[in-house]
Image (cartoon, rainbow, N blue to C red; front, side, top):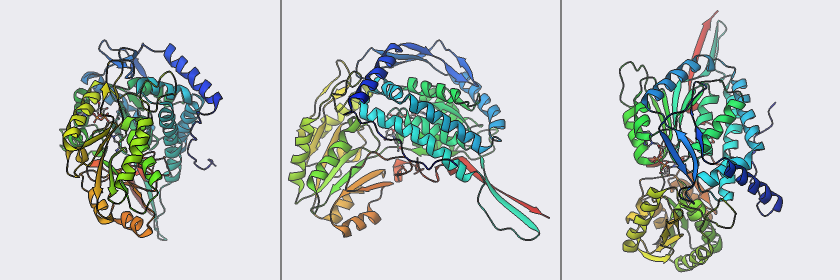
Length: 516
Ligand code: NAD
C-alpha cells in the first residue's frame, strides 16, 4: 500500500539551519554555472553547435548554462525515438511506471534546495517562491503516480452471465510538452510526468529562458530508471520546432502551458489534419489570466490588503494566477487602497540568488521588462499612480511593485495580461457590480472574494466565473491535490493540473466484451 498523498511541506527560512542549507545549495549551483548541456534523444546525449545562452535575470551577463538547441531534423529524430519507446512503455505495468515517479520524487526531495537554488539563479526566484516551485514539482510526481494506481484497473462496468465486459484506460501515444518559464520546475515536470505515468512518451520543449533546470530534471528521471526515449529533452525555439512538432502527423497530443496567443496558435494548427495523420490531436492548453480580488464592504480589510499585496507581487506578479485587478466596494475603497500602498512601500526589490533579503526578484528578461514598463506608461494615462512605477535594468530586470488607483474596468490595464508587478484598483457600488467587473475579461483563471457576508460568498460561488475561486485569502498558491488548477474561457482548456481527473486527458478508455 502506498501511503496517502500529502503535499510537500514548505521550508521555514526563519530557521537558521534551513538558511545555511539553502546557502550551501546556492554555492553548489554557483560552482556549476556556465556548463554546456546536450539534448537527450532516445537516451543519447546530442551536443549541438548552436546553443541557447541561459542567463541570470538578476545579474545580466552571468551565464547559467549553454544549452543545445534542437532544429527540425533533431526534433524529427526525437519524434522517432519517442514513437519507438511508446511501443514498449505503453505495456509497462502502470504500478511500475508509478514507481519511477515515486523514486524521482525521493531523489528530488533529497536535493530539494539544490533544485530551488537553480530556480533562484535561472528564473530569479526569491527563496520562498523557489522552494514552493520545487515542492509543487515533487507534489506532481507523488500525486500523479497515485492517480495512475487508482486508474490502472479501469472502472467496473456491467457484465452478463454469458458475457464479460471490461473498461480500461490506455495511453494515447507520443505527445509534446511545451512549458513556460514562470514555474520552470513544477509546470515543466508536472506536464511531463502526468502523460508519462499514463503510458505516453514525450518530447519536452522547456521555455527558452529556463532550460537548465529542465535538464537537471532529466538527469533525475534517468537516475530513477526511466527508459530511454520515454522523455526526450529538446529545447529550442518555439516557432522553429514548436510549429514543426505541433504540425507533425505523429503528434498525438500537445500539453501546453503559456500565453493565450501561443496557445490559440497551437490549437488552430493542431486542428489541421496532416497527410498520414490518423487521429484528431488533443490539445491541452493552460493559458493566461487577468485575475481579480474583490473586496466587499463587510470584510476584514487587513486581510484584504494582505491578500492583494502578496497575490499581486509574489514572484513579481509573474504568475498566471497573480492578482492584477483589485475591485473594491466604494465604502471601503480608500481604506483598502491606503493599506495596500502602505504594505507595498515596505516591499524590497533586488537580487535573490545570494541572500533572502528581497521580497521581489527580477523579471524574466528584457522583453518582460520592456512589456511591463510599457504598461506602466499606459497606466499613467489610465489611472492614478500611487506606488512604484519605476524600473531599472542596468544590473537585472527590476521593476518596483506598482499600484494604479481609479482605473476604469474597461481600461487596458484592467483587461490585458501584464505579467508583472502591477495592480490596478477599481471601485464598485455594490456586490453585484463587484462580480460584474470581476467577470468582465476574456479570461477566467483565478479570483478571490474577501467578504464576511455568507450570502455574498454563495453568490460568488455561482457567479464569479473562474476555474479557481478562493474565499478570504489571496488568489495565488494553489497546491497539487488540494486546489486542482486551471481556467475558463481564454485561460484555457481547464485541464485542472494537480486534480483527480488530470490523467484522463492523456488516456483513452477501451471497452472489451467477451462472449463465453
Ligand atoms: P509563452 O506562450 O511565450 O511560451 C510558452 C512556451 O511556448 C515556451 O516554451 C515557448 O518557447 C513556447 N512557444 C513559443 N512559440 C511557440 C510556437 N509557435 N509553437 C509552440 N510553442 C511555442 O509563455 P511564457 O512567457 O513562457 O509564460 C507566461 C504565460 O504563461 C502567461 O501568459 C501565463 O499566464 C501563462 N501561464 C499559464 C499557466 C496556467 O496554468 N494557466 C501557468 C503558468 C503560466
